[in-house]
Image (cartoon, rainbow, N blue to C red; front, top):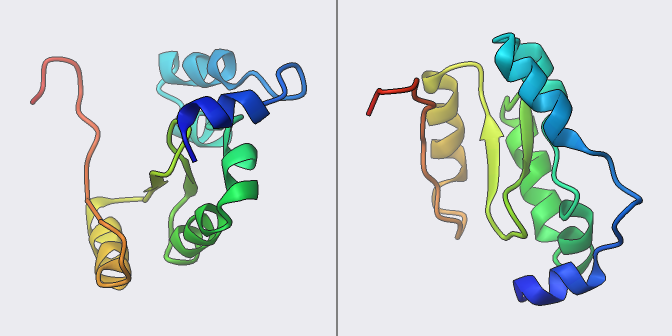
Length: 112
């Protein structure tokens, strides 16, 4: 589904504003607050047309992701894991299922 089609189906005003709460948690270095306030209002729109988005999210959560959701208008899905090893274990479980799987880590300002 094209991004333009996702936005055409999106119903503004019926969704939660995630950014304010998420950024407040970031400013406090509050990991739990960040996890609790991650969201994507386009996810339900994309998942309605592509149920595999929700399937992947549930798989990531089942593999230990503290939070999993869709990125942008899709189709990328990501999970936040307690640590790199947990992410690598999950990636090995997902690899070979037809998805492209990458393990990434967050960086601090100035770090590459």
